[in-house]
Image (cartoon, rainbow, N blue to C red; front, side, top):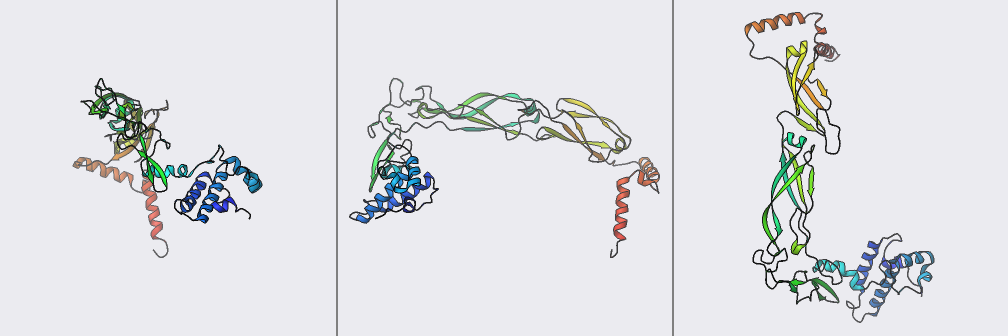
Length: 381
């Protein structure tokens, strides 16, 4: 009787990857395993066929031979296992990753001791002024965290004593459990995977190997940092269990709102209010920068929202030596609380600006009036 195609038998396409093969075999093995079908010879045969198909397709060399020559190319090695891919994997190997997670096996799969957990990473939110973020500085931070106990040097055992091998798991960190028709491993409930027990715990940390303290650190903040930038301090996070590596500390930068400047990437923006006389006749005024005052020339006839760019007066970024620019947006301020004499002067100015030649002085206003006139002269308006 001709053998069924291995791909069809597993129910996968010919370009299926390792994960798809493994999933298909797991499904069939769970369905037809002899322990779940006692006395069912047909189920046992189907289980053997699925296992044979998986051993071939799960091995890159055997799969290549099968794809080229069919069953004849692997007739002498279909049940031999082999070294590559998944060849030779038994039922417990295939299901170990699944049930190891369910029952807490993790960390080694074949009885290896679970390592002590490393320390957690910490985050510190650091508020800076715009001036501090642009210039850079050194900050002293106080971080509440778990640190290694100095009395027992992080071992958790009382000075002069040592942890002993766990009696429950024999120092392996895991125990084997029978789950129906297969066995699985789980983390030892006594030592929690460490493989050791502390019979005489440290009086300061009570066997934890860590204590809560406030750690003081000096952190150098580079010039040019901005909101959202993170500074990583390796090994300055929470201490690990039983002398396991400490985590890292991440300093997250948040720049406070400035009363004058607004940062956009490497550029600074600010609004400069000027009076209507200076805007009309021109002039010069002082504007602030983060490094001091500079003079800004205002040409005659400057219009509202005009932007003047001052090169190199912005921010020098962390990873670039070229500073951004300062962009000054002009805001023309209309005078208020005029005296009668001042009002009279403005009346005289209005008379001189009105008339047929008035459009020369107010081109935008004149253009707007012309557009409005044409709008109302359209048919149907």
